[in-house]
Image 1: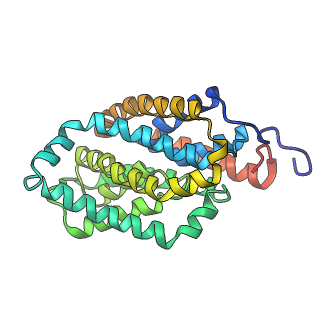
Image 2: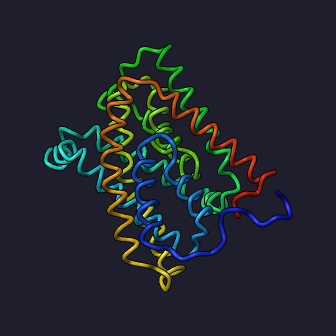
Image 3: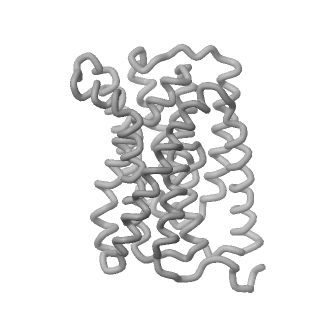
Length: 279
C-alpha cells in the first residue's frame, strides 16, 4: 500500500535467466495481439532492470524479426525476385511504414514519456477494446479486400494505427489486424500484411533507437544475456507467428481481449492504489 515499499522492483543486473524470460515473452507477445513492448516494460519494472534496458529491448525485436523472415520467406523471396509483379506489396508497405515513421518522429516526446510506464494500464485496456472491435466487425461485415486490391487510404490508415501502437501496451499486431479488418480485408491477408509490416517497423525502430541505447548503456551491456535473449525471442516468435496465422483465420480474439483488459485494469489499480510494483 502507499507508504510501504513495493513487493516487486528495485535495481538488479540483467542475467541469463531474466534475458531468456524476456526473450520468450518478446517473441510470443510480438505476434500475439497483447503488446510485446508493454509486457517487456512490465517485466523490466518487476525485475528492476534498468542497465542497458533500451538496448536489450531493441535487440529482442531483432530476434523476432528473424522469426518473420523465416515464416514468410517465400513471400519475401518472391517480392525480392519479382518486384514489379509484387509491386502492390512494396508500395503499400512503404506507404504504411512512412505514415508510422512520421508519427514516431512527431510524437517522440510522448512516446518517450509513455516508455516510463505511466500510460501502460490504459494502453492495455485500449488493446482490449481494439480486439473486441475487430471481432465485432468480422461478424457484421463480409471482408473481401486483399493486399493487391488495397487503395492508398487503406495503407495510410493501417500505417496510422501501427503508429498508435508504438505506445507500450498497445499491440502492434492487434492494431494493424484491426485496422485491416476495418478496411474489410480478408483474415489471411490482414495477418500477412500485419506481420510483413513488422519487418520495416522493427528495422526502423532499431535504426532510431540503437545509437542512443548504446551510448546510454554501453558500459552495462551483458552480451551473453543479449545473445540468449535474442535467440529465445527468435524461437518463441517463430511458433507465435505460426500459431497466430492459424488462430486469426478460424477463431475469435476474445480470449486476448479479456487477458489484456484484466492486465490493464490490474496495472491501473496497482499504479493508483496497490503499489505492488516499483513504477
